Image (cartoon, rainbow, N blue to C red; front, side):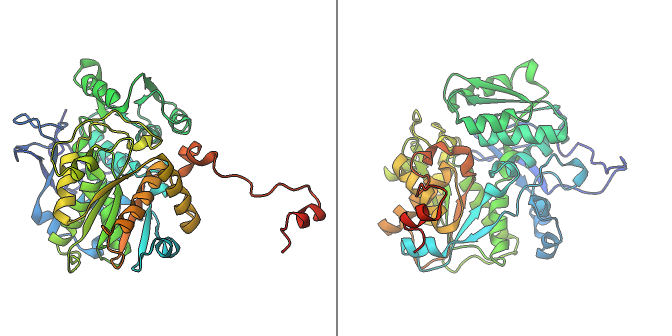
Length: 434
């Protein structure tokens, strides 16, 4: 496969255009070794994960005006991303610029006295934040010469890869655990690509995909969260950029973010850091604090923090928050680092608390979240009750997916409040006329 630097960039009429990526290398997060911008996700020296490294001078040239002049989606931040600077190269559903919902009623119920916001990424095209990472990953993948798209997924990523492939007219093959929620299976299969259910957990699925990517039969296949993972992960930064821009170019003092691999949390923190470093925003006077939320059925990162250790012990996931069920989290150590460095914390919620969190968020904000959002809301409550989160500091909570995908989680707890006959008398007898 070719390198992003070596790949030619063309306009719709095939004439070369002078649009360059600010990305320059892949950098090992462990030992710092550098590699060309190719399809590689692990360091050859220490086997650590790779991430995209940028030209500081290129980033420093980006202005607020440049961003504000862009489209109302993630590509307004193209000058800060590794791929997609030329619209003709994009593989995208044009996600992003999702609502930042004021949550005054939720704040009042929890005893938070500062502004509280919900970043609602259920408004994306396939109703989760995964559309952001997939658009960036597959744009890089097409530039690198791949002709088929794939992933290992707990559901939302499968939806997004299948939809992006359908839009682009590219074959797809996605791999999921066999016990995934029916809503997420249907919303992947409907796009017509290959859907492979594996008898095992997500970690089993991910291991299989890591083996497949090394075979000759899959050499033309971009696995968004394996061989093009460094580019995939960078798409999450747009959730940090957007929040800062939507707050009037201001970084919130506190954020609460759900964790599966832990990568979303690290990339939101990276986005805030980049914005400060290139002068687009000022950091809050006391910095920002990052908080992580996990399910009690799959909480290896939070458990490590509570035990004050860097040793993340893999677990066999259980519980209803299947989109967060990654028992061996790839970015767990980096999530721990971000939380400790910023003075934040992590906590977790059991299934009953998750269901209560879904209902609380819906009742107070009108946002119906999937189980991951229930985890985040439940953990927000715990953080306030325990005194870990400052109730006088502006806070943003991230909802990463749509509640209709995991409707079974609360289906047995909600329903009609009254049953009446189709008559005025019946309505009156039920006390509905006051």
